[in-house]
Length: 115
Length: 111
Image 1 (cartoon, rainbow over the protein chains, first blue to last red):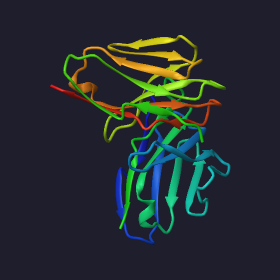
Image 2 (image 1 turned 90 degrees about the vertical axis):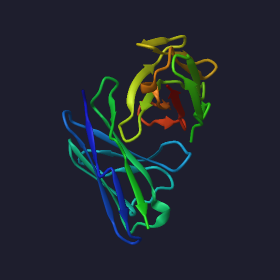
Image 3 (image 1 turned 180 degrees about the vertical axis):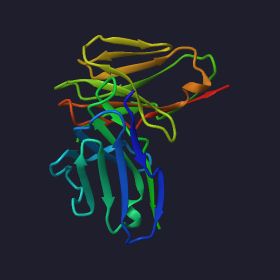
């Protein structure tokens, strides 16, 4: 079946540094990638939608200069958290359209801790 | 932001018991309702996509029903097994693309 590989699964970084999270579709072409984050005891919230070769669309309240999304190919999308702060500590997960029985396939998520 | 609610938040059942939980969503402008099963450190796994009022879908011991008029869906697990332990998420995409998720129901099946 369709698989989206997300790396790293867990990362701890120092405040002020940048962290890159990758999502790679392994056996299908992901025309659209969705990036979500989840704070403790809350639901997954959509941060941004990216289409291959074009600029990402960010949800209200999500800073595009802080969360850089690149979707340069049909199999790879990256989310870079720039100048991370402790309040950015969260669970980030991607979802790709174009694969899977129901059209959407999730990565396994990245737990980011900023210290 | 649309409100998608799941209850209960967590559930502990004995092996062999049957159980069910609820997803509530806005009943206007319905497009589809997705159920996912999410085990820790793994990708959420799609269980069902439900589109029609009165729909009932089944996958092994797991089944789901849908009421679009009143805005709810039930997920049932018959004869729960320890391997059913996971978080069950529902997602509501009002336009087909952007998903609004519930907070999930965390199920623990005690052997």
